[in-house]
Length: 122
Length: 122
DNA sequence: TATTGACTTAAAGTAAACTCTAAGTGATAT
DNA sequence: ATATCACTTAGAGTTTACTTTAAGTCAATA
Figure 1 (tube, rainbow over the protein chains, first blue to last red):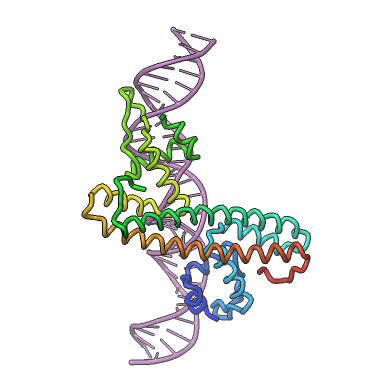
Figure 2: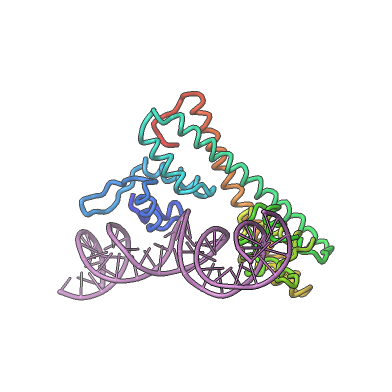
């Protein structure tokens, strides 16, 4: 699969895909003799994982660290589990904060709908 | 209330509070004759609102726009409602993406706990 | 053959949201 | 009185995650 197809598939730009590769989040992607990247099914799976985590706001640096540990093999299993748990906590807290704001927006929109706005911003 | 107390109360720095004020998200905060800011209860409420929205990832620019419309009075009610609905949608999509990543992390951590990791990253 | 389009690289540029620096004022504690 | 501390300003610097630019290669089509 060529870079533009992959980009389209995930709603990324080709620039972003090359950037992820430069940063070591994916690949290195094998290239044909013309120097053009050819993405394998495994590459695609990796991108999907990275996309899911990035869409959730996990940092590039975390992903780099995790992937590096992964490549170091079984001796890093314990550490990998720990950083996953740490990220899960961060994610949970963010979801909670967003849920709170979401609820608050709902209440506010409701006030707009019922024409019972007060003078305060919120 | 002085700036450092307010900063402490919300877990912000004084720089951030002054930055928010510069950007028009809060205040202008009244100052004593020594030039020092004195935050009122209304100021605090506004900061709480901004904090909640920022913690959820809503952009400074959106908040600026909303607050500007608010200050323009009743004639902007319709537009204000619209942008709230728009932000609620954005927030909902983000929560969903984060929930997906959260679930995925849970599954992965479970595999680590059960010692049934495979070779794939995820 | 010429141009079009997709690809390549390294490196500079951008946007958002702070964060820090430098230089200064004024009240209070030693 | 002198030092310390909290505050003030304008403006420069930082971080993260891309995004754009410049310069070029290669294959296919008009």
